[in-house]
Image (tube, rainbow, N blue to C red; front, side, top):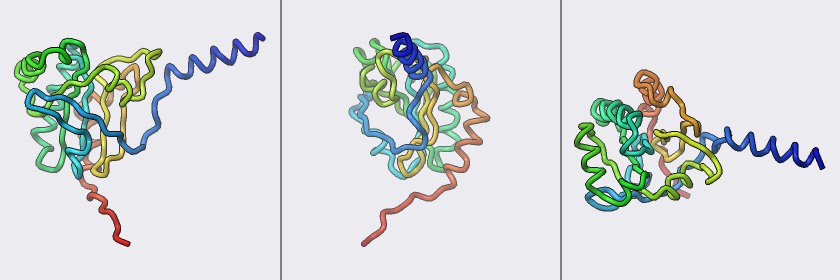
Length: 181
């Protein structure tokens, strides 16, 4: 009986640090922007997409969003698209919260809201796991997730220098076209 309990503890402990494998195909999700619905990543096929899952009240999310806005401004012409997904209760309930977040941080990319359930499902976080925000997911031009934050955070995915180096080869890759049979 003790070995069953020990196995249960090991399995529980490893699930706290596990995350979905990368690379993997990105799932679809819809966010509500103040101007309407936006389907991700379908809306940005052919672009490199940096998704920032955030709380509008989080200082780290605000600072990361400003970094990502600079990246959008500079790398957007090469095919980068940054998208913010707010999933705190205030943002989901009131579109003005997102407008205020975008304006006060001078963001040059769309930010929308999703339910906590939709965001955590997309990230692969179970209701039993702890996680921190912001969470970053990077998709290549073909809709494949190439990087994702650890549930307890990944400092490199919030670091502007690291992101530039990581994004450069993705931006240089062509879009894979479907072959005709």
